[in-house]
Image 1 (tube, one colour):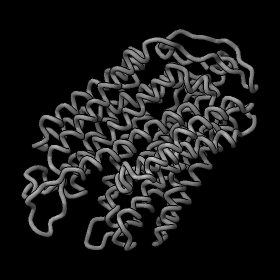
Image 2: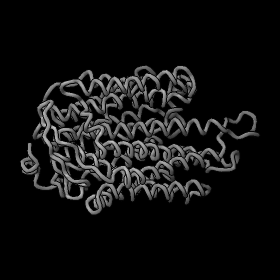
Image 3: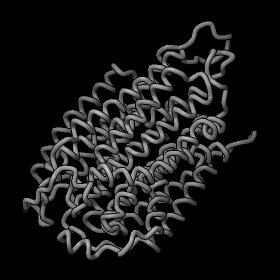
Image 4: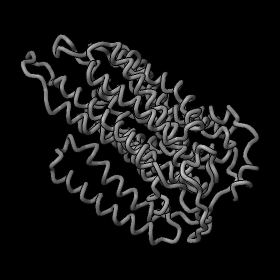
Length: 503
């Protein structure tokens, strides 16, 4: 479908209800990533298992998201976004109900695997917006939907803390909440999301999907478990080596199959490649702030000399929720900036806020005001990043590759988050305080938090470099036709998002 014909089929105005429905659905994505973090110790105690075993409750979702997101994003491009969204939400509901009704670690992990499919909602939602919204309102709509990712993370922490308060906490309530939200989102999708106006059809590249899935599992598994296995252990190094081999195999497969899941020309196209690199750094910085602040404020000051002795609920509400709220507000301005100065400079502007926020946290994290205000600066940075990256992706790929391209960008952020979790966990465990009272748990030295915040600040510095240097030239890739193997030249100028998106 041509750009003009496609625009004629778009709905006459950016319907607020469509954006709200897709925003709610996307919010569930980030909720699934952080919902269990405050209740891991409760799950461990109730199921009578070890720390290593219970860590699979989070690892399973990460691996599942890595496998499902690109596959379902591409499936939506081929066979329609709405039916794919409905299928993902049904998987999400099934996983949530299973997790809410079981007291078995094995079945809880199975439920979390099903919940991991929710990550595919975000690229599918952006594909729907690109299809349904007029160009003048597309950037703002994508920014609002993207902003709900940060909101979901904060709300999940608060909700998990509230639902497990009391002398007899029950983690099952948290999963019932997830199921209820998914049901509401499913109803909204069924009622409000229209059927796709065009699909590419074709065959599903099962070999490409399988090799990509194996590659991501081999990469993410040692990242998420390396602190427990040992970074120089044979298992960790062997999996990293296997990931390198599978990267070569996947590239070969996608370059030779007739209808590849990922067009490697699109994947290696400069704007797409550097946007994914920015996503990696943004995921690292975002999760560094979340984990670093959550742990820092819970440190008992009478034992460590730093921290605020906050409970899980207080750390979520007082120290993390303000950043979540400011992210939602900033998302509206992020969409405006994308339209005014372009996504590249919006990304760089946000990253400058991030550098300032982490510099503040690095230098002064000894007062509640400093931690909260620095976190709000970081919240603005994350929101602007979320607003800019979908616009960069949409401007850099043809219409029929929107889902898979945004799916890969989501995976880049997930990889960054996993790396942040692994590095910060290892840093905090590598240097602990001496002369603690007998029987006290090992507690990290304050310098480890300082180093963690400094590394996250460097990640934002790298985002500035990527935005200003890596994305400073190039355009959208040659548009591939919907028939496999054929392509037509349709080069557009750099920074096309300033003037609207072509399809």
